Image (tube, rainbow, N blue to C red; front, side, top):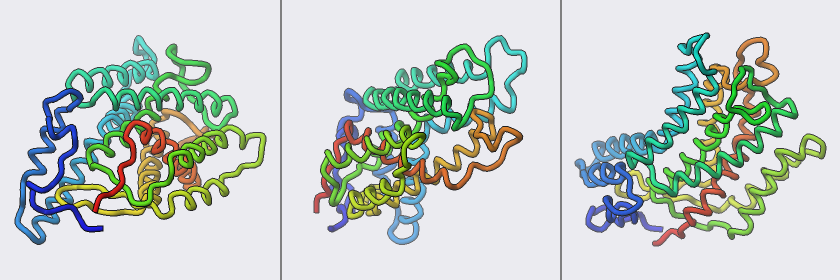
Length: 300
């Protein structure tokens, strides 16, 4: 496949960018358009600019998750012991206010907010089961909770959905050899079910890894940092995102947002074995977002 044309007048714009002040557009669409229209000198200045623009777009895609992680760390270090509301309740209220603020300031569009809500529901259901099974606990008291699960926990799953929904649009994803929709939905359903059933039935995680390789093994994802579209195997993208989430999870558990059994006596790094779980969860997340952003075939 040939790269996208280098000349700015020939580079297709994302639908939200074509009318950045139109319905559904975010303020970031306007900023991104201005940055993408900058044309540095060829050679290393162009490569450096593309790398910096890639980092800026990634940072914007992580905005919701980054703010939430900052809240977890900040309240762990500075939240008063005798505050009128519990720390977990403060986190829930703060997460809701961030969501409202991002919509009001057009930092996020309504479709992305719907994805966040879907992830909140899916994540909370899993949290209720996993805490009951003793997989992890929330050690602090709170009022805004369902059973042993404080309501802010659903926003941590929502942060993953927010990231994927944003990055899909920001980098204008397209695909080679994307599998049929029914296969991806069946795989995501089997992965989600296994998170529950492996507590009393055989864990089929290895079979799910094999199915993932079989279904997505040929899929290439094309993303556009600046002018040209760049390819990457989709499975590699899943792994990189899972690694990033694992690093964030270490910071979250350090802040005592939740605690694994081996961290009850003091914080230790989250086991690298959790990478596999996050890898599979990334596939569920990606498939859910694909129901909103339909995968587009790469055009030559």
